[in-house]
Picture (cartoon, rainbow, N blue to C red):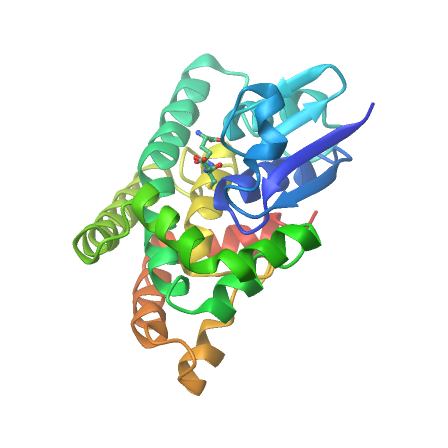
Length: 256
Ligand SMILES: N[C@@H](CCC(=O)N[C@@H](CS)C(=O)NCC(=O)O)C(=O)O
């Protein structure tokens, strides 16, 4: 069966799907695109968002659906969704919380950092089709303006997103304290994978499945105006128990 994961390479929702397929040992090819150019690829399925998985005749259009499918068909790795209905309901609720809240605020926080730098913006989409990278270079001001408008990247909203991220990390820290070991209980589940992947564009663990900017180098060189602030924010989240958990989960579970 031919399995293709259509992505925006650096996207955290796409990382969630990649991780799910990798950890369950499901073979696939990745077809990565620049945001907005990816619509040419998704429109035949009447969708706008990625990840989108084409698996034989099936088309899966939500990252959580892709995780559940990988859990079913994968031949190795831990169970991502528990069989017990009560445990499953808890994992589902946590995954939804991270998808609905963490996803949007982390994305805004990271675009706020990279969009001011043309070089940085272009670098994160290396690995997309060459013509898309050329079009991005030529049309960067227009592309950037559309993205800023579409995602609501204003200074106020970005500050609010950073504050919400701090609150969500506090929520995850409380869950870890209540449930022991992992977010939804004593073992790794889809909740840990989702929390870690969706926060990874801010925490930037070295095991991330796509090359992210080296914020420390950018801060040291002065090449990216907001890099110092982003490093300080990243480090404040890394220092929390939830941040430590996400980094540990990446170290221990990302590369099967
Ligand atoms: N609920 C979706 C969210 C996916 C999502 O927001 N994807 C973003 C990239 S991170 C996207 O494709 N945005 C493009 C668009 O909305 O046109 C999922 O879990 O797969």
